[in-house]
Amino acid sequence: MTKWIGVFLMHFHGPAVYVGVLFVLITCGLGVPLPEDAPLIYGGYLIGLHGNLPLMIATGLAGILIGDSIIFRAGATHGMRLLETRLGRHIPGERVESTIALFEKHGPKFIMVARFVPGLRAVTYFVAGAMGVPYWTFLAYDGLAACISAPAWVILGWWAKRHGMLAKVWAWAANAQVAIIIGAVCLIALWITIAVIRRKKRKERLALMARLPKEPPTLRAVEGIGRRG
Image (cartoon, rainbow, N blue to C red; front, side, top):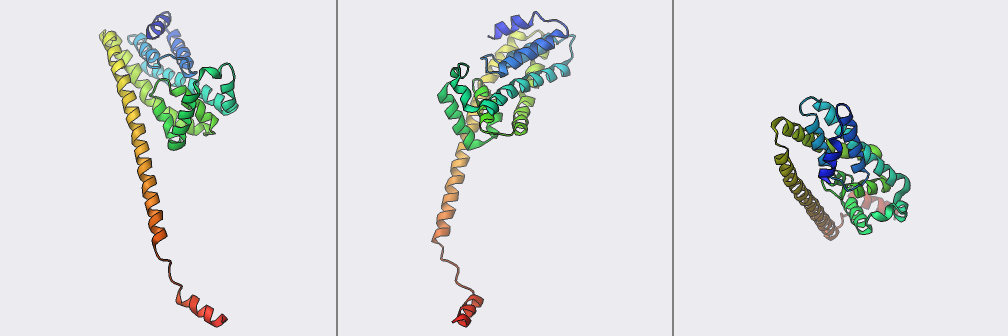
């Protein structure tokens, strides 16, 4: 897939490069199994000598957020009913169920983690829309994560063009993807561990409060009872 994206984008020249990168990124956001880092790296590579680096970074962010917003809106508008259509049958039901469980435990923060896990992004954003997450909340978490990944990949491609090291950059990108997935899994595990510890401490506090003797009546309450008697 990475090679195909490169061949496709190499046909674009000048300002058309930005349009090509935008198109591929929106397609990635719609759930098509394309690696998101590839168009960003190629985008940076193609403008490495004569293009505008800030504009390519902005193009990358725009493509990511537009694609993600489309699938979020699909979840918000059609909900789980979409899974029963011909299009929705391509989304594994067990993946949706596991994503819902993770979302219920961690809330919108899980949107940030999903951005760095290929194959989980589209399902997570669809579930976020279906579960009623406010759009601006979704955009804030997704945008924050995109502001980390998009500039990094574009700058890496830009650097590769200037130093003639595209092959080495792809090796770095592959290692980085593995490291990101491991980091995301570790972060999820940490969240689960913290949630379990907090729940356990809350139960212990409630049990301790239940064992404490009830507060004795105040003197004023006793006097009031005596006068009524």
